[in-house]
Each structure stands twice: as structure tokens, then as C-alpha cells.
Amino acid sequence: MLQKHTGIALALLTLPLMPVSAGAVDKPGLILAENFQAASHLADFWISEKLDGIRAYWDGQNLITRNGNVIHAPDWFLKNLPVSPLDGELWAGRGQFARLLSTVSKDSPIDSEWQSVKYMVFDLPSHLGTFDERKQALQSLIKPLNPNHVQAVKQFKVASQTALSDHLSVITAKGGEGLMLHRGSSLYQAQRSYDLQKLKKAQDAEARVLAHLPAKGKYKGMMGSLLVETENGIRFRIGSGFDMTDRLQPPPVGSVITYRYRGTTKNNIPRFASYLRLKEQI
Image (cartoon, rainbow, N blue to C red; front, side, top):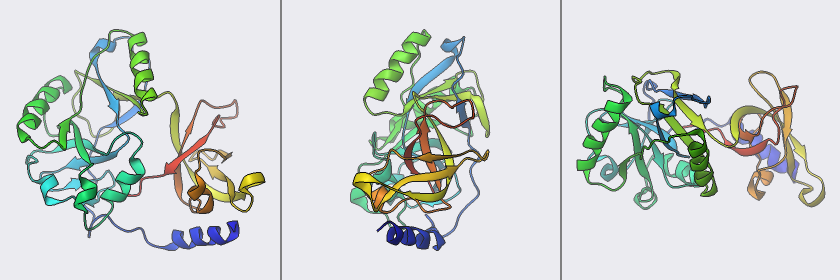
């Protein structure tokens, strides 16, 4: 059975990826987050929930993914968006990433599916002020728009590392991914920056699938684990985090997956690595 489904997966790998739009545009210049570094001046940062969604840049006409593909959203979803650029996340709720990806990847949007999607906006890329100023301008811009599906991401501050950890625990317990920290005095930079940091209880990273390893016991005849390789050449196995569908139709050899882990060994092997999902392809 594994051989059959592995063959299907390999065949799928040779098919061209379905584009989100008829043609790609230039990749938007976005600020990207670094992993959290213990901050001695937490009061300088605004805190928000890290949303498990799809990054979406509004250029005044289209919603565009990080990879430069136009997302086909319904006309009513885009109707009241401003002409000024927005940086945000399409989000369908905690733990709903797979359903969201299915919704936004369609060339012909289905209204009933988009009813559960929100555009959570967290920045104004073309604004020349600091994040403190951009945050205030964003609130003023979004509030009069009226549609419930367009919202400014809630930002708050904490007074201590303990308070930050408490907020992280609450969000994680509710099924959230973690927290984002944005330095209030920072300008918008289209690059990876410590002015924007992500804080999670578990780290995640990407690796390329090298092979499907057969299972034993109750999963005999299916995929038991993946042999993967990081961009630094570290090879290891991932055997947890899969549901039955993943084991019957594992991520294709050659594809890139996202996995979750907790620290590394002395040989830089990720500890307690667990499969999360195929890397976002849109």
C-alpha cells in the first residue's frame, strides 16, 4: 500500500503547481520576523498574537502572497479596502490553516468558504512614520471601513518577561501559535529584522523530504516516518505529527515541509521533531 501511495505522491510531484492567479506579480517587500531575543526593554515593544494564517499584502488593487501570487478573493471581500498598501494576514481561526489554504488557493473563489476568512491587518508599509505612528494611523484607516472581515490586529504591551510568558501560555493553551513583538520606534523595513520578533513555545523550521520510510505495527503498509534534510545538510527522521491521510499520502519526495521541534542535540539534530504541514506553496 505504501508503494502505491508513494507512487501517487511522486507522480504528484511532477505536476506543475496550480497558480493562485493567471500570472504572478513582483514579490512584495515585506518586513520579516526574527526569533525572539530576550528584550531588556519590553516596554519598547507592542505585542500581538501570532496568527496561523497566510501573509497577504494589499497593493491597492490585489491581495498578493509573499511569493508574488495574486489571491483571487471575492469582490465583496475587497470592496472597501483602501488604495494605500496594507500588510496583514488572511486568517480563518486557530488551527484552521489547511482549510484556509484550500479556500484562498482557488482560481474561482467560493463565497461560502470566504465567509469565515478575515483580513487581519497589522501594518502600513508605505507609511513613513514609526510603528507607534503607523499603528495609530492603521486604526484610523480601518475603523471606518465597516466590514467585519477587515480588522486591525490587536496590539498590547507587557511590563515584564513574566507577563510576556503568561500571555504566551494563555495563547498557546487556546490553540494559538505564539506572540509577535514589534518595536514601537521602528520604521518599516522590507527585510528580516529584530524590530519584529516571533515568540513561540516550540520552534519551527523547514526541511526537504528525502524518502518515505515504511511503518511497523499498527501503521504497517503505510508511511512510518520521513527522512528529511535541512538547508544546512542535517539529516534526520520525523515520525510524529501525521494523521492517517498524511501516512497514506505522505508529502512528496522533494517537497519542503514545516516541522516543529524543541531545541537541538549537540550534533544539531532537532529534538522532538514533529510534522506540521507542507510548506505554503502559494
